[in-house]
Image (cartoon, rainbow, N blue to C red):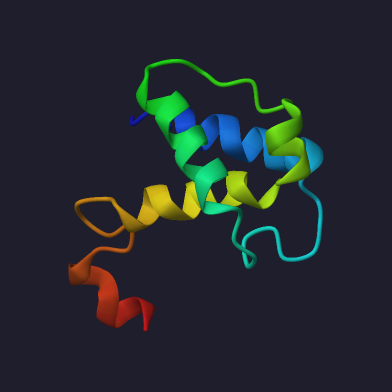
Length: 86
């Protein structure tokens, strides 16, 4: 079947280990940290999420996951299935 993109795998594993805080997906991270993290993943490298910058702004990791899903060319819950979901 399909493999999970590295950005999602790394971010969700990190959140499971370090991000059990209130509002992890509700609160946004600092925009510059999100962009820095995104750039690191876009550069074909797996960033070290245990750097202080990401530990201190744990919400930027959750925000990057949300950004990934928002920017998908087709929604995760497809248009054809929308009626069933709603």
